[in-house]
Image (cartoon, rainbow, N blue to C red; front, side):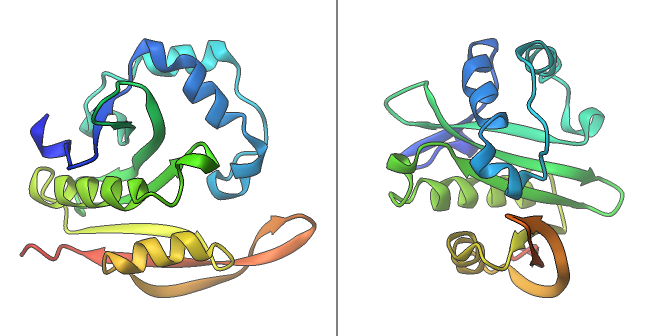
Length: 177
C-alpha cells in the first residue's frame, strides 16, 4: 500500500508471523501504563487476534499496523487506530516503538504522519484523538509536533507506581479540509 510508505519505513497489516512480536509488546510491563493493560496476554489469545486481524476497520472498529523499516519486513513497533467511530468520523490513535534502541530515530514521527494522512485522506475522518499521560514528554512532543491540541486534562486519571497521574486529551481536526 503506497499510502502507508514513507522515506524510511512503511506500515503493514499484521501477519501470523508477528505472533512473538505482538506477544512481547502486549506483555511488556514497562509500557502497560500507556496501554491501560493490567494482565498478561497468552499466545493463544494473540494468535486468535491475529487470525481475525483481516477484519475491515468498519467491522473491527480498530486498525493495528506493524511499523517496519523499508529494508525489512520485521516489525519495530505498532501503530493503532482504536475506538473507530464512522458515524462521527473519529478515532483514537496510539503508537509504540518496542526497543529503546529504535527510539529517537524519527520512526514514531514518520509512522504517525503516515497514519494521520491515511486517516484523513483515505478513511475521510474528521478528527483523531490521543490520550497521553502528562508525564510522557516524548509523546507530548511527538503529537503536538503534528498539530494535536490539548483540549482537556483528566486529573489523577492513572495509578502508576502508587501515584496518581494526570492524562491529557489531545485532538487533531482534519487539516486537509
